[in-house]
Image 1 (spheres, helix red, strand yellow):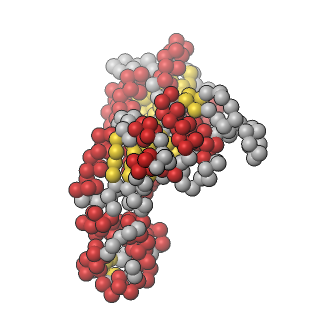
Image 2: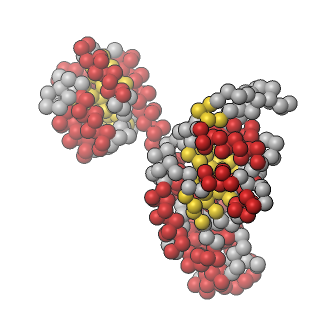
Image 3: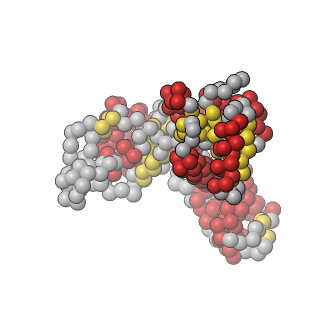
Length: 387
């Protein structure tokens, strides 16, 4: 059932709108308010899927209602109702966030089409929010150890800025989680987050992957193609395992950071990009610089902020929380009943040497959930979590 509110001071027009919408679909529940103040009071108390709001009203006009409502419940789409002399104002309300406007007297077909489109848009907005929450949940940072709390505090300070961040740490420690949270908590969170695993892309293709190419740039370049930097425009690009990037690609990345410009492979034409760069590596880049494998000037461009992600062995106090988190998550994914771990099983897992870090712990927890008893015991750990 879609709940619609009609805010209109002219009783005759208000009744017509309510009648049209009520008769259009049994799935529409239509309520009314006779002025802007009453409309805002009603919006505060109720959840609506759509508001139709007149522009010229006493006490509080439609523009003021729209601005106030967007502060209270910004997800509600507004369709503005305009008289002939209000068209300029109606257009301006769309800049303020209104979905659309209709003129008086309302054309039946246009009214109903606009209402349907606005309701469809509301559904998409809600679904996108749910999806984003799911995505965020996938990248939760689990732990209350001093090391993890330090990282969380640093993210809170750094994320709202555009400062470049270099994340270091062993494989499996969760460097990508830090990168995701830097993006999620930034002003760029609604823009793309583009991840590039530099170690997984052949050196001869890395430049094309990052910067794109033009048709004919090389044998398999049969058409123009945008690269990851263009795809990340206004958002964040995460250069994972940047220590494996070729020196020629490093030079182009350096230029992109210095000038906010890139050029596709096969052309000198510049393309402006507005991208925040977050990089990660499991290598000692200072050692790589000494050996001539990494550019020192690029290192200093990337490492404005350094975040070192600790190994799991350095944050053993977080292991019980991680086991609980993975247990719930894996049970949901596998469609299994929830299980628990005995205190002795947890103590034994805390004592292990986790060379594969959090990634290895997750795999072990999944194995124990599938093969162990309803309560995973110390014996289960000894039997199935062989090291």
